[in-house]
Amino acid sequence: MEVIGLDEGIVERVARTLRNNPERISTIDLCDTRFYPSCSEDVESVARYFIVMVAMDHRLSRPGKPYEAELEDGVYRGAELLYRLGMRKYMEDPGFFNPEHLASIRVDEVEAWLSVGNAKPPDIEVRTLLLRDMGLKITRLFNGNVKDIIEASGGRLYGSLGDPGLIDLLRVFRAFEDPVEKKPLLLAKFLSRRGVITLREKLGIPVDNHLSRIAYRLGIVMVSGSLWAKIRGHVEVTRSEDTLLRLIVRRGYEAVADKAGLDPGVVDDYFWLMGRNTCLREGEPRCDKCLFKGFCKARRNSSFMVPEHHYYDTWYY
Image 1 (cartoon, rainbow, N blue to C red):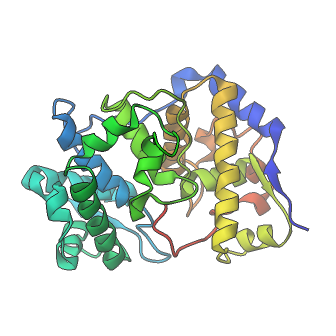
Image 2 (cartoon, rainbow, N blue to C red):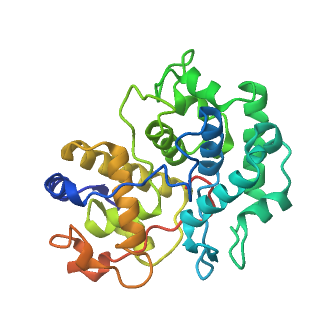
């Protein structure tokens, strides 16, 4: 029998630890021009950049083939490399992000943009189709302006059939159709923090691999039975299992944010950075730097030291 749920005691301890250590809660600087447009840029340019980059922000590496490269200003990996290449393209050719251009973008353009050295995402054709789909629909449905999507939402994340919110509007794009809403919520977080949209409701947590891994290791989410055997054995889960797992992980972090009295976007930033820098997928995790080392399940029991659940065939996260 499989059991999937939250450990409320661990959720409370994680929330209390965050609440008691506000000075150690790191967040992402969304005005860092290595990765994002200057905070003086116009709204439409910023919105175009972020909707394109978030659409591309999924599954950049594969086992044995990391997405990592040395550029002129340092070594970048994963999402940092993606957004660094995004800003290089933005500075060279801001028209690249124009929806009319995206509607007919070629595979070789996308490959040249996102590849450097031996680093190349594994699904260039899929990414090209996602960009074409988005460019065509922004052009035809929203007058070629991303800010028209934002204005139509009225600052709501969710609305009604005749009065949709941002998440509802984004579902028209294949890149943003994920039922667990990782990319839509990530885009909403970025746009909100950059002042492009003023949200009228609380943000949800955009669950990615880092957050899933930490949830299993800390014990925020408890899984048993054959599904836990898949996670421990690095066996790929099914699409429905993936959705179920990420929904529970999302609920867990939203409970942490609520109990800690923190903005969900701040909680997402913190655990994303923790996953990149401390609770590493490969190699020895840096437990000495972890706020939660006193009660982390994986630190006490190596059977919880899992990478995350595996589900590769997706552009959702």
